[in-house]
Length: 465
Length: 105
Image (cartoon, rainbow over all chains, first blue to last red):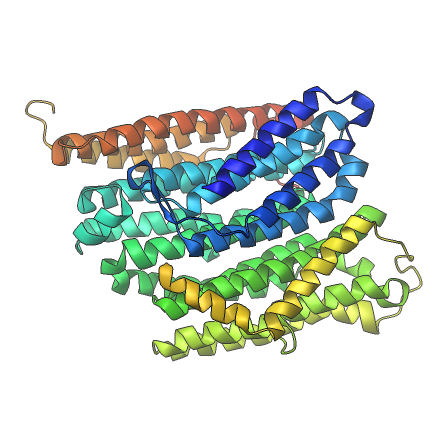
């Protein structure tokens, strides 16, 4: 419970500080919020107590605590990378709003991943989505941002309405909205299967799995880049974690049915994400489709339905957070300095900005799964999880997809390193916070890839799921 | 419980309501009407929760309080969506879906 309370206090402190800050000093709130959130992140790593609250609605254990810490680190990196953008773009009156909405959304995710019944899950889901919609439309004079926001809220509202309808059926057959009671009382019946399908499609919207992915690219393109990275890593990671918990722990009776669904959706998601990524030129859209494809890979771990599946999924989500934040960080650094977001503009970047190109190279290698960096091990463990249960065809199709993805992950690398260009982006010095953010992301990629005790620790924890 | 009305009739009604809402959401071109369709979808779930609670598990109130929370959250959602639609209207002077297609594919 400490995560939620500390973050709530932090939001209230920001609100109070805003009142007592003079107009010309409003910019200092950025550093204040950043410092406070860094303290919150560090305090999260201290030992915490397990237990349930509110009659079982809220539960927490070491694994959930650990996952909240991962989300915190991700948000900290995003904030570090966004400082420059906030200083340049944001109107001083809207500065505190950015942090307050972002932190509210994070609290929603905390509640969502520690939910013990469908009510808390639903409220957490909405609390995590609604502030994000406001953040996507943060620049209210920007038509693209508003268009992205309306697309996001309409899709999110439809998704949550559909999953609510599914919850009513699960409630009818399971006799309760509490996860523990449903797990014991649910039996296989057509109504329960219908409920599962509705519920799954609602959550699939949130993770942007294939037949429900249409909002992703548009929203990612229209939103400010900091928010785009938040949507693609934090929001997706939290939704995957709770989907996994519900499928493993609440609906194990229907596992034959949901494994079929997950199989089909995984294959479709991988192919759609990878094939559409081939034709993108805008870097944000490109990374959006890449993140759709990555979600398809994650489903390979979920289909395992046991402890190995859980630990591989959590490990891969960690790897994915760091690699994607590295890539988005570079896109943001270049966009802040020059306003350019297209892949063509990156031609010859290595000669002018070698460090940024190197960060981009490592992140893309990690996303593609090339050995020295963490992404390789993440993908390899996911294959093991699927193969352990005999899904060899799925693994085969995933390997085909990795081959496709290698092509488009290397396109920016080729543009940056092998091509020469006369009008390449000139050298610029990134601000210090951006550098720290990129450094943290790269450090994460290397630590996860080369230091195996991290995986052992996650494996130990995932028994608690 | 309503006299002479079984749970099947009410569930048929809510299922119809749900699919009318879904159809409306997918076919309408006006953003405000799309929001109204969302409300239909949510109300189908609300009625479902109350009815299932009343007819099948009357000893606990779980479904009823869930439905109250849904209504509250739906209000917040609508308020946010309306504010964005108004902002979009200021920028484009239109609430038609076909106008919101700067970004595609």
